[in-house]
Length: 184
Image (cartoon, rainbow, N blue to C red):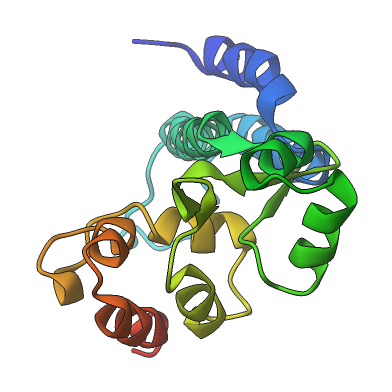
């Protein structure tokens, strides 16, 4: 079994892949998990209330953070920089920035730079329906979660990912599914 100290050390090394704005949040969570692991069960807690050993709670938090970093790394690996998008679209980097600012490209921040998921492009042009679906997703959700939604299987789309459904021409179904996210 991996010790808490080993997990915290591993997370610290992996933080180099996290966006700067997330780094502080993740470090704080790791420190909180490590601190929690050193606490004892409060004596005032009734015996009927089950509590997990602090180290188990800390390990669970560490695993959650590891999963978040894995997802982030996967999404960054499948994304393009502004110059790469400019090359793909045959426009200048400034034009890409204008399109992003106008909400005409799906993007997320990573280490202070904008990243653009590669799946939103088809043969050098934006995939039809992507922006409509992006706008239908809840605005309060973190951009990374909204980006990830496009690549996960959806029950509303018969087990297909929204990207696959868009490529099949099912724009209306994807936009409807996006509107459903967070509504229950």
